[in-house]
Image (cartoon, rainbow, N blue to C red; front, side, top):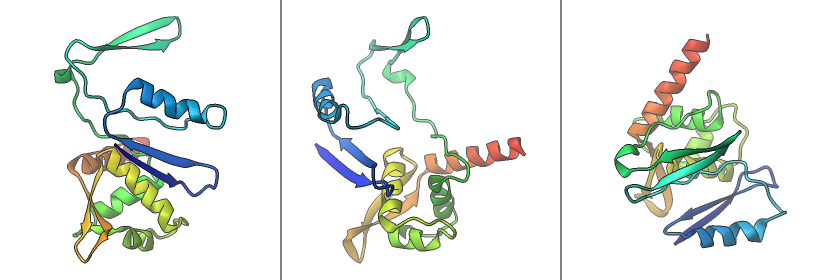
Amino acid sequence: MVVEISYNGSGNSLIVGLEGDYSIDDVRTVVNQLEGEMSIEYLELVLQVDEGVSLALPEEGGDIGLPLAPTSISRTASNLQIDSVPYHIVELLANSDEPLRTEEITDLLDGIDLEQNEIASRLWNLSERGLVEKHPYPEDKRQKVYRLTTLGQTALEQAKERRAEEA
């Protein structure tokens, strides 16, 4: 079980990343500890399910069932909000010939006033979404280098297509 906690830089928000096998009771325990003290801005679950499992989501007027057969689940490109910090990070990595460290990404993001730890938090999120991959930095294993994945390239292309359609 891996737990990563990082601050998003606004002073009152933090990102909690959980990796590993969790039961509903485990997740409930974490949420119950924070109940009344937090609101969830964004939640992403990556599920490995057995065939025949379904999910019912509440909707106006009732529930809708979503089949979650493993063969029907495929990883698609995540939306990148045009001109967001993650968009600019992905675009920067797409234009780089080599993987970049957090410090280098921070330095190359012209006009974006974020600290290195805030950029690291965005990179962690992009990695969790499968848009970038991280590897140990060869000269210092405590540092990471980031490279764009195929999924990240697809997400960037889709964002650029949306921008062109809006223009």
